[in-house]
Each structure stands twice: as C-alpha cells, then as structure tokens.
Image (cartoon, rainbow, N blue to C red; front, top):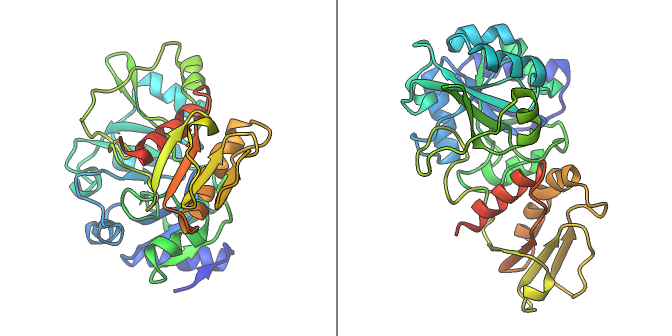
Length: 316
C-alpha cells in the first residue's frame, strides 16, 4: 500500500480506514505512530499483531482536543490540568484513570490509560477527521529502532499499511510520560519534554518509578534497539578499531576511520542530536558493520531522554 502525501484528501482516506477498523501509520512531532480507533478492540489487536508487540505493553491514546479526555478517562487532578494547559498540544503523555469505554487491550488490563495531544498538524487533522481518539504506539517492530521518517516505517513494517508521509519528525524521540500520585509526579519515560521544564511548572522534583513495574510504554530494559550490537562510550579512546565497527559522536568529528561514522550535532545542540538520533541509527543499521559505538551526551534537558534510549538500545 502506498506512502501518501498529507493532503486533505489523503487524510480523509486514512481517517476512513481507521473508522472501518484498520490501521494507519502517521507522523507526530516525536516519532511515527501506528494508529487505530481506540474503541475498536479488533483494530487495536491488529496493532499488536503487526508490531509483534506483547499484550502486556500498554498503548498511548492520542486526542485532538482536551475535552476528548472525557471520552476515555476520568477528570485529571487540578495540578495535572495546569501542566496540560502549559504543554498541550505537545510531547507530554499523562497517565489517567481510564473509563470502561476503553478496551482492556489498549491498557494491558491496567485501570489507567496513557493520553496525549500531539502538536503535529497531520496527526491533529487525522484524529479530528476520524472523530475518535486514536490508540497508537510507534510504527516499528517491538523493541526495534523508532521510526522518524516514513521510510523507517516501511523498512520495519512492510508495505501492507498506508503511511502518511510528514517527512522527518521534529523531536526524534518519544513523548515524556508522567503519572501523578499523592501530590507527586513520577517520570515513567523520559522524552522530548525535559524533566526540568515539568519541574519548573509543577514546583517539585519528579520522582522515579519502582523498577520492573510496567505502567507505560518504553519501560522495557531492552528497547529502541538496532539489529547490530550497540555500545555506549565516553570518547573514541575506548574504541578498538576494526573493520566491522561504526561510530556516532555527539558533536566532534571522528578522529579515526570507520566503515560508518556520523555526528549527532556539530553545534552540540541536544535537540538537534535527539532529532537526528534514530535517523542516524537507522543508517548505521543498514551499513556493513556489526557494532555501533555511540558517544554519551550530556544528561541535561532532552539529553536525559537520549541517554535513556541509548541505554535501552544497549540493553545491559
């Protein structure tokens, strides 16, 4: 099936597909998603089957208006409402108490549901035109590299689904996921919205969740990974040169010769580095190498999310 330009006609076509119980891949500001009508259990099951995703990994539900929360979840706490007014639409996902209207397959049987309102105009129009919230994880195989271009979707999922092509995504890493509980906010998944920005608005430090408990997407130890061995290094001194190695640096051009090499951001800009991360990793995966060395980035801002993705890709 074709890759489609995001025209009004094609967005209507894709919303029709969703309304008739099938799935569509579409861009958001973070990564590409594979979406289905949240209320159509059989359609949602198709997402799990296409991705080869285990049913115990919950999905994020995407909405086009804050009033749509009422269709899928109970009223958010006042302090969460304040964050939503500040950061929605945008790369923030919140965990809320779900309503019975949401099938258990969407939430992996949890009594909560992950909700976000994307800022990407194509995603917004698709959800609005479909007139239903859309359940959508990333449009890739489970635990594999995140798709930040339409061709990444085709590479992993094949050509049997329609893909709305919005070009390269802006942030390049998934949304930040938070949960409010007893006056505190827990950071379930670092993402495109930095902890510092949330803390500034919330007025308190974010807490980390209990290890091993799956409450949201992105919490598996091995995730976001290429089909090559990925190794995190501080600098090139840690790398033993071999013909089968590639190297991805943060901002400095590699000093040694590799079969594959790339720089995340020559300006040392963490947002640019995040935007380029999975695009470069996809290229490295396609290169004739067996190992990918990736340099650490600073942990401030979106750098925290970058390092989360790299550590899970390394899988140690």
